[in-house]
Length: 438
Image (cartoon, rainbow, N blue to C red):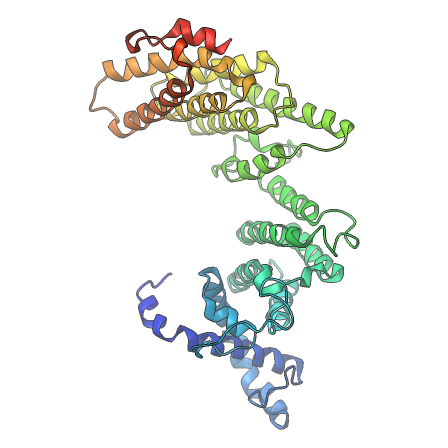
């Protein structure tokens, strides 16, 4: 349980604690190895190494994960003191700066990176899913620490070493196969951080060593984890957008990744053809999934419709302009959105958001979406009319959100329409906007 009141207690001493935490983990690693890893007289004296193993090792073994969690929290909050301590500096010194060791702070590997990384890596390698709650807790702490350690300001270019990168990837593959879902949630976060930070060095000296972009391995592991979460014996090839079983929203968090994949058009003509087929395949699947929910009700049905509507609009608005989208697909999408706009439930806010997104995209130069304007306007106007005629005390927050989304769409549309095509507000200019759209 989080004890927020302790923040004020620890804050005045965080610079001192940063060095003590890193020093504690360093000494633990030294005792575990049985030798002095650092040329530091303040470390445990070698003459007492055997005594250290018998007396200190049990203490460190029980407490090191708590210390690691404290270091991780400081890293997550961006505490500069922990960065200085990781690089062997003194955070309590007023003029202390991270030691650069011949490079900039974002290029070189910090002095104690491999010490902390070694402890984290060993904890994850020796983890087994059947050793109880404490083991799961330690694995989660280690993964959160690794999530921070892979950042360039701590790791530098350490992961440009293909051996280190492959060891981490192989470990992640094993954890994806064996660890429980509670651990795999943090595994996916760590993979995302690893892919992001390693990609910053890819294309320079590391390009010759990697057989494929490092993001590829991370994406494969994430895809396997997702497949394992939503998979079932009857349909081992289930897709996320077809899911009606899981109560957790798996689509929402993955839309950001889908956006990244769709924004980059392949360079070769052959790959561009495959890319266009993939786009049409996703759109067709989304529309089929929504149509399959007709006449059905319930939370699972609503979640599936919402997920597929959001995915459809995302694809339509982010694909490069050179990708031609079928007019029938656009019309069908707008028809479904208009239907959901006038439904008396929370689905209407999702539909209003989708309508706003499509109209704003059409006003920003996406000519393939110009037809959406005349297709969505009638449904948006009918939605507003129903809200005005309805009971003002019924779901006021929801009604306010819907009106807000539609008003934003109207504002963007009217602002982008040429003066000579504008009609008096009372008529909503439907004829003029029909001409503008065509």
